[in-house]
Length: 194
Image (tube, rainbow, N blue to C red; front, side, top):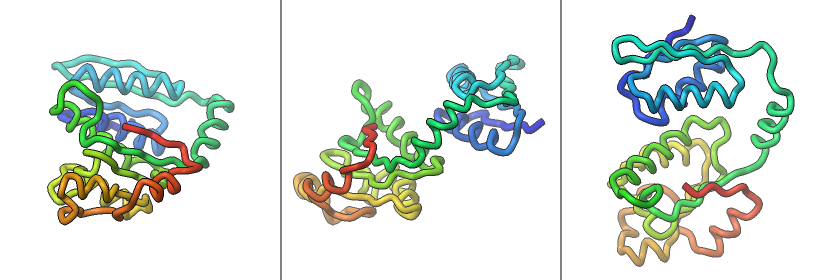
């Protein structure tokens, strides 16, 4: 049985690696060291209608996942149709959510890292307001955004926003754009806002 060691990894990495492993293996054991990862892997198994059991040993969770022989045909049909719809990401802040800026920065970094593991990458990634800071030279997300651009995602950055924050010369990825062009590019796509 395939064993995946995810000790020391934070969300969403254990789930992403588990999904990848399940593409090649029908039965796996995922080792995690925290309850959040254990619960997220359990939720993944439930969502995919897979058998899940967990054993706790020495403060580690050994999560056993086994694919069922039959798949829900309706779910498969929905997954296939969703995969054909172009989708885009509209980023309006350099953090994800409200409350703690530190947590928000960690979450936005995890968001872009997770996007790299999608088989169908976003058609457009548009950055506005403080979201433009994620496209600058000192951005913690820069590597991931560049990789998404290399995979074919068009990265559009609001020029008005860059000028407002006086950071246009620090732009490290993407094309300077404007409100009209960004809206025109997003038209006809399913839009996700982190």
